[in-house]
Length: 381
Image 1 (cartoon, rainbow, N blue to C red):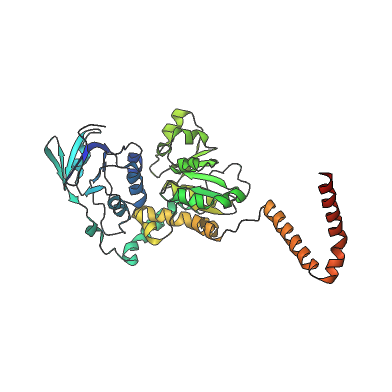
Image 2: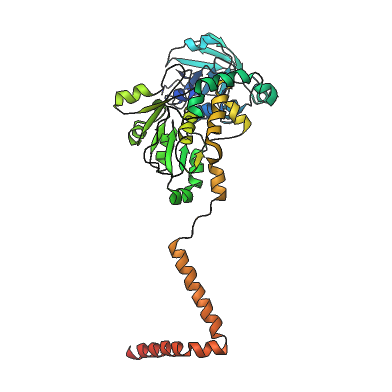
């Protein structure tokens, strides 16, 4: 790390790391770097990935908040005390990886020369009125029809969806890389021990599952977002091929010689994982790190609402969030617990019998024998 790098209230200096895809950028970020992105309406999951890497500042070529959705992503950035400057324009994307810049207020300086000016996002900027649901979903009819015409056979009928090997009617535990996934996995410890779920990890959720000492029965998503160890631990690997024909992460798997299958559909890796799970023979699909509220559904962007909605619809009533399972699961009593309960019950019955004349007569031979043995042992000593 450069000695000239600094972080102060008025100016922040650091090396720039640039990528249109915040989650990919987060894999290269180091603490104190300056992240440069090009995303309108920064979603919560992307912001969480950036925050975990600890950048000094986040520079966005586009507005991080347009007012169409809740301020989930920008809020995470500010709550982590990370400077957020957005609407800088495309000039900021012309920076070269590794260049050192200084961010002062809303200005970005390279070697003392102003290269871009944007808007520094403050807490009060997030207090805006989000469009109501009717306005938010207005005009979606055509997009939904187009989505169903293209991806309907895959999402709703399961055409071209690969099978999960070795599932055998077990429940599926779907692990994401969301910030609360690890905590939810800990809350599921007793359920995991009894249910022995089939673990499906999504993107960076593969490393989350490894840290929780879970087997990686299947990994679905972008291999660029996980460690090499997670890739090699995977029982099987499935990549998502988008409508543009691109399969994020497939090239890395090919270089590593990892055999993989694919599912063709638009949306995110999580949507693909849910579709694969939906057309499996799982008894239940339990998700760790997945939110189901309206704000979270539209947070990822308008283009992803239809895939997110229909992938969840395909799972139907089998789809359950980890918090719900943790709150309602009642573990079966363990063997030693049953033995202790039986012994306590016998002792209490004996005490109750001894307190009655009939019980006293019934237990007298046993107590006399025990007393004789005790005296005999004492005499032998």
